[in-house]
Image (cartoon, rainbow, N blue to C red; front, side, top):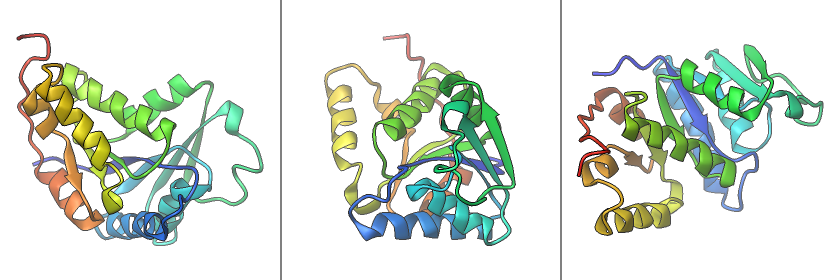
Amino acid sequence: MNNIRTLAVFCGSSNGKNPIYEMTARQLGEAMSKKCLGLVYGGGNRGLMGTVAQSLYQRGGNVIGVLPEALNRPDVRMHQVEDTLIIASSMHERKQTMYDLADAFVALPGGIGTFEEILEVYTWLQLGYHHKPVALLNVAGFYDQLLAFLQHSVDEGFLKQDHLHALIVEQDAESLLARLVTWNADLSDKLRQ
């Protein structure tokens, strides 16, 4: 069983077109509050990022924002939605700080930044740089095509099946949080055929 205290959440700085994305971000904050989980996120108050943070913050949950210096602007931070705000000198430092502070990682819908962040921590898991759960909150099938592509990578011999199975995929916040605490991946060596 994993001792999860803080969850890094990667998601869009926009709300997306489907209202279910914002609703699910709010539900994730609520579910994290019930489980007494703290949040580590990219800072600011925009989009799904701001919705998760605000949802948890309003319920008394601990919220840590990690914002790169280049985005430390009034239009990004119109109102406070975190207990602690860390200003990082670069995006690399921002991500490293978030990774160090988190006990698990979850991606909600988002764009290229979200993909990059979740795939990087997934890569690090595959390489054994950490042993923390990595998960997709697959709202309204948002990640279906990515999951199909990852399976294609397995089929073509570039990704090991047990590494794909180590990725937690759920459609609702409650189920996802339940899986995080029971996750146990004994992964094969990436470098061995």
